[in-house]
Image (cartoon, rainbow, N blue to C red; front, top):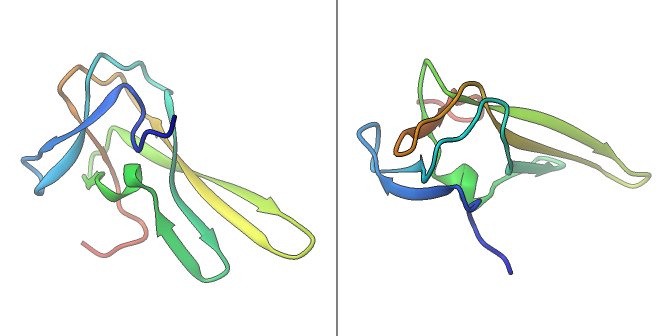
Length: 101
């Protein structure tokens, strides 16, 4: 069954900006939560996970780029990885690289 967010995460009101992504439980460093963005050609799209992550100059997560090359197209995707242990109730953040803040 499709779920827009991993089971360990929830949306909530953010002190950074409006709505953010929060841990429902303690999460260890180096946890991968899957795709936040993907790009085919010049088109960049956000997933539900990528749409609610807020910016921080000192983020606790990062986007890791994965490249896929097919004979007729290239496809890039970015997965969200935790940089440190995240406590239950803590907001997940990343440094924006696609958007100006």
